Amino acid sequence: MPPRYERPPGEGRLIQLVYYAFVGGSALARALPERMSYGLARAAGRISARISKKRDQVRANLARISGHPLDSPELDHLVVKAYQSYARYWLETFALVREDQAFFLDRFRSPTGHRLFDYVAQGKGAIVVVGHLGNWDAAGAWVGANGHLLVTVAEVLKPRRMFDFFVAHRAQLGMVIHPAERGATLKLAEAVENGAVVAILGDRDLKGRGPVVEFFGEQVPFPAGPASVALKTGAPVFIAGVYGVIHEDGKRGWIADISEPIEIAPGSGPERVQAITQQVARELERCVAKHPEEWHVFQPFWPSDRAAAAR
Image 1 (cartoon, helix red, strand yellow):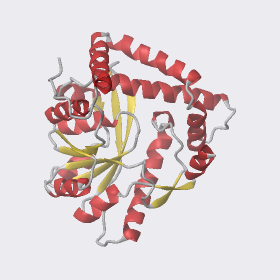
Image 2 (image 1 turned 90 degrees about the vertical axis):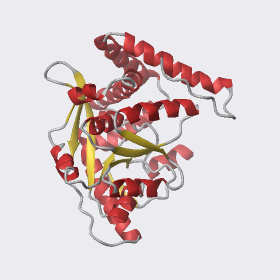
Image 3 (image 1 turned 180 degrees about the vertical axis):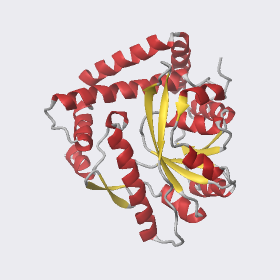
Image 4 (image 1 turned 45 degrees about the vertical axis):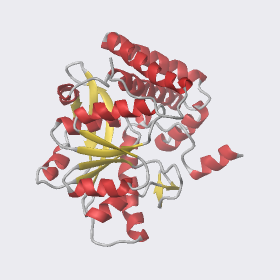
């Protein structure tokens, strides 16, 4: 059973059902044979692709990324694969929350991982930018399992004790999670200067106030966090694409494509932030285009889509 956490003031009993639903879902996912649980996730994704109210937006997002016409059977197939990928992500969130470092060392592989690990082996900190692509949590666990301290930020979940549950588990895997609140950027910069690998989700700017860059043919605001931390520390920025796979031994797991580092030249100011963020966006675009069905962004993303949705 997961450890007991106190219920914070202001969180009613109803919201606690979310926590207990997670605990129950995790227990069920771990009790089922792996092949069966992934089969159920595929079926759930296929059903969701038919009934989801977000289906049209997912089609529009994937059409932009893939170049397939909106009425093409290729796009229909890609939409189903996207929902199946997202269902798999949630299955893994439920099922893998209790796995240890040995599991991630076995299931997570990266032919280009040496680019990051050779750099941090010198005792230097680095920044890794990931998108909402595949299972980015598994990537963090893999970095920690390789003996490197990984530091990141995450939105505080409600109920709070579910957030605390995730933080405690990730600490066992060599990960430190800071709440996404004021001062988080300074904490990340300090972690880099102390030799940690800092991971930042870099493809969605929820507040819409970040530097504007080109991403799949349209100008869109991106988070400034990766560039801000890089300029504060001088650390290079690596971009990682994470994808779910079945390995040659038949085991399910993940593979990561880690870019060459973006070296940070001295300087400061908004123009430097924008330039670095554009480089990040270009690499993330490459990673998303490689497996667009793994990009878990089902909301209006580009400004033109947001404007159309607001009408």
